[in-house]
Image (cartoon, rainbow, N blue to C red; front, side):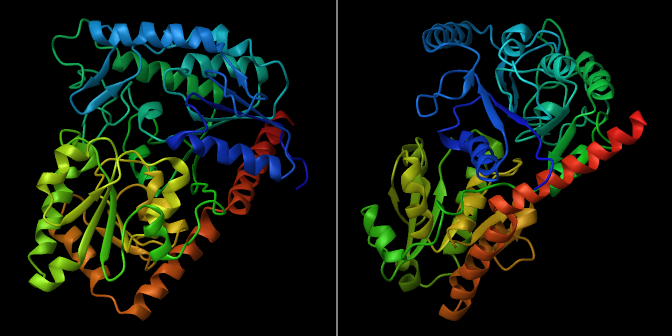
Length: 436
């Protein structure tokens, strides 16, 4: 590719763990594509000593301890009902701006921001732009960059009105900073003109916010998955590697979260599984096996209407086997830009049953890679499970192939690089024409 932009990736979370690996995938893809790329994160990454970091390891441990004490004392905003806040006013970022910008010692053509939780605010982004005067690309794994401060806006009507009177802060809050943040962000967007990425689900949310309803630099992109790591495996062997006998069973895999985290949809899933059970004969019921992953299985397992096996926290290197061992991955989230597990499952050739939100709108709906149920419709979700269950062996094989094919076509490194360059070149030409 000609004129490959020098790129700095910024991500606040550990790029070797969980969802943080999304940013590492971008880094690896750019490197393989021959780009000059650096990575800036909050703390050192032992596996990647070349990565830039804001704080040394010792300081990181001290700050983590201070932050935990703040949480215990109620000083940190944290979770407020269905809302989650990282910081208050936009001009008071979680990490002082100069601590971030002093680590940027090169010239870059693109700053690619993936996660900014507990690291950046729009003030920091403005400072980075003033220093580099380059393209700023924002990926939004949650709603934080587009609302007045919270990560998940749900059905909150205040976002369309420009925030203020935030129900997440409540009347006891000493100050409602959300309207101030929207105005601050509007001015920052005018100055910085960042390119804001999002899937189809996120694009619909953007256009219903006061901040972005008329914003011209919105781009639809697909996620990037390491399709060499997440790949199809023999189902029986995959199950055996996890200590599970899947032969002759209909296996459903999902990740457990606490029941009270409404947006993760555990209550919807339990009800949908009950509805699915009611469609089965006793013999069919005995075939179904649920595989649970996560740290909250002890509260969920007694409520499940099928035999289940809890795996607890699954190490990242075991995730491909967990997907491959299943006949379907169940994603009951009702408010999520992703989640990344949907894309990982498809890359492993495992169909997905999900509600019609997030990445499922692009990767599942209309592609015979699973089933997209109407949002919060438990009966429709149960219908999707039953659809997978009633499939013939030939239909199941075709669906697994479709899952892998869509992963390779939409979430591959080649697809990411192609889309990245198309966006970069398009806005570069616009910038050059403005200068002329």
